[in-house]
Length: 75
Image (cartoon, rainbow, N blue to C red; front, side, top):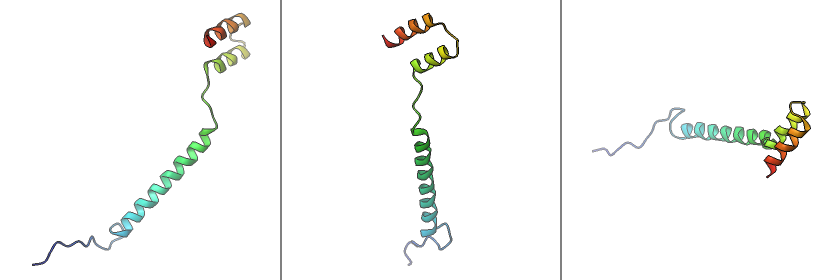
């Protein structure tokens, strides 16, 4: 009686070949993730005050409106 055959085969996607492909896919995913975070990492999200300053600079609100909204944001 022969026992269970533990040989997974010798094709390119079984045994070492299969895990080598998975390994390289994981490495590529990690590299893409790191590069993406490095590129976006320098950008900080806009605060409400930043948006208010842009509206004032563009002429969308008056100085009085700007000062009132600024006080509301900072309080």
